Amino acid sequence: MTITGTPTTPTAPHQTPARRRVQVLVIGGGQAGLAAGYYLRRAGLDFAVLDNAEAPGGAWQDYWESLRLFSPAAYSSLPGRPMPNQPGHDAPDAAHVVDYLTEYEKRYELPVHRPVQVHAVHDTDDGGLLVHTDDGTWHTRALISATGNWTRPFVPAVPGQQLFGGRQIHTRGYRRPEDFTGQRVVVVGGGNSGAQIAADLLGLADSVRWVTRRPARLLPDEIDGRALFEIATRRVQDDGPRISDLGDIVAVPPVRAARAAGLLDDQPMFDALTPVGPRFRDGSIWPADAVIWCTGFRPALAHLAPLGLRTGERDRIATAGTRAQSDPRIHLLGYGDWTGPASATLIGVGRTARQAVAEITELLR
Image (cartoon, rainbow, N blue to C red; front, side, top):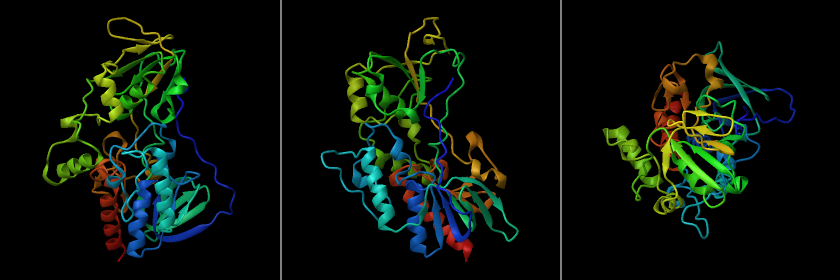
C-alpha cells in the first residue's frame, strides 16, 4: 500500500560544504520560523533560518485549494505586520497566506536559507550545537525548532489496508474535489480537515461517507480562530475550559451548510478495509473508489534525536513553555498547545515566539 501525501525531501543545489557560526539557528521557515525571526531581529541577535522548502509559505503552499482561514485577515497576522484583506473574501485562502508570508519574509529581511535539509543536531565540546545539513554544518549556541508536523502525516493501522484496491491518500495529498469526480469516497477523521474535505467533495463525488471514531461535534458558530486562541490562552493561564470541552470542529460556512442540508452526517469508523471498500461492524461492505485519511500528524523532530531529549507522549519532547525541559538551549515553536497556547496558528505563534526569544536572549548573556 502506498498512501500519497507522504513527505518528500527537497534537493538542495550543489554547494561547497561550509561551517557557519550564529548565535541562534532556527530550523523551519514557515509561520513559526518567521515569527521567531522577527523577534530575533528585534533582539539584535545573530541568527539564520533554515527551511527545507523551495519557496516561502511553509505548509500553506500544500493545502487544498478551497481551504480558508477560520478568521478574517485582521485576526490572522504575525507580529509586526497585519495581514491585508483578500478582496472579495471575509476569510483569506491558503494562496493569500502564502503571499503574506512571502512578503513578510522580505519586509523584515529575514536571513532564510533554502532549500536546506537538516539531518541532525549534535552537542559540541564548547557547549554549543552542531547542526548537520545537506549544505554543510552550522554552529550555534541556541536553537529554535519550528519544523511543524506537515511532513509527518499519521495514518492509523487498520486491518486490510494492504488489500484495498482503490486509492488511499492522506490530508497532505488532497488538493481539489475534481480529482474525485464521480467516485465513491470514504473520508476518515473527526477533526477539521475531515469535515472540510468531506464537505468539499459533496456535489462532485458520486457519494461521500464520512467516518469518525467518536461522534463529530461542531463548535458554536461564534467560535473562530481568534476565539480559539483566547480559549487556549485562558486554559493555560487559569485552567479555563478546554477547546475539546466545547467541540472538535470549527463551523466554517461550507461545513455548516452541508450539515444543515443533511448532506454531512458522520458515521462510526469501519472495522477493516476489504479489496473493494470498508467493512463496518454490522458486516456490511461499502464499495469505494478512494479513502482519504484525515487522521492528523506527528511532530517532525527527528533532527533532535541525537540530543536524547526527554520525550513525552505522541513523540512530543517534554517542554516548559517552548523550552525543552532537559536542555535550555533548545526551544520548540509552533507544534501545538504543548509548545504554547495556539502556537500552531498564525494568530497564536507570535506570543510564544516572543517568549522563546526572550528566554534565549537571557541565556546568551
